[in-house]
Amino acid sequence: MARSVIALLLWAGSSLAAQAPADTGRRASRLFDATEALSITLTANFGAVGRDRDTVDSRKKPHPAILTVTAPSGDTVTLHVNLRTRGHYRLANCGYPPLKIEFDKDSIAGTIFGHEGNLKLVGQCRGGQSWTNYLLEEYLLYRVYQLVTPMSFRVRLAHVTYADSAGKKAPDIRYAFFLEDDSRLARRNHTKLLEVKGVNQGQLDSAQMGVVGTFEYMIGNTDWSVGALHNIVLVQDSASFATYPVPYDFDWSGVIWAPYANPDSRLPIHTVRERLYRSYCRTPAELAPSFAAFNAAKDSIYALYRGQADLEPKRVKQTLDYYDEFYVTINDPRKARRAFIDGCVTG
Image 1 (cartoon, rainbow, N blue to C red):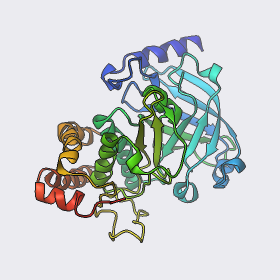
Image 2 (cartoon, rainbow, N blue to C red):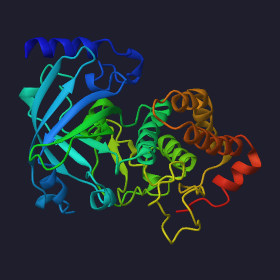
Image 3 (cartoon, helix red, strand yellow):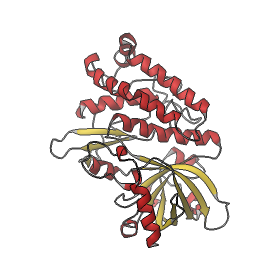
Image 4 (cartoon, helix red, strand yellow):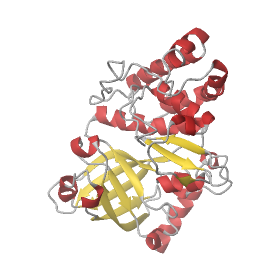
């Protein structure tokens, strides 16, 4: 066991330091230091896990499981964990429900999961290449947003083998990604979580809200709300009381175009592929910093997609064509006014 832990620590320590957000002033957590996909096995009674789809968190049960992480050297670390189901649409409709992995603090000390706390695991909804594409594209959206702002969730891709401890299902290998815990995101950015509904966009840091609104427009996502805390986390600086929005959960975005994704019937769009700016009204001068940030990141964003293993080339082209439309819009004053100002939210 000791040799396995040491090997995994060396493996994690060889990751790219450039992946750490520039503003943290501290060493980044090991899990999110690198970008290569982890190889893990989850062993649990997945029949019981799959039946636990209650939407009320208090009624969800902890399911004991064994998580095994395999380093490129072949060494392994084995951890006893609990699994809890989570989510809404994917909880009800996916073959493997979204999971939260609960760790024992003492057992993860010195491993790549050390200091992370509990983690969400976002997995493929179903088998097949199309669903692999959707999962990889959602993972990449988190990485796209990281290129624009450190006030963003970190992710780590994984090849997950689901092993049924009851022996009723054959092992199943699918892509998934770990999503940074809300509290860890807050601490990393020297803030605290603000779990209060009813906050409006005008009460948030204006620059950060501008980045969020522009990003959600870029990816064609209307499935979010600040006031309802729907797919948005709020974090607040304890000294200045500035409050920052952080978006997550992008599977309903137009750039992915999952078969189940449809816009809210109250919105003036017919498909998720139609972009709609859902942030507060801003002048061209106020929009300019957000546009500049996305322009600066463009080449790196496109490189992420072109370099992603197992993402079909036709999906890469479809995505970059969609982003091309966005970049034409933000760099044409008349088109930008039409998209971001003429139909903006006034209050």
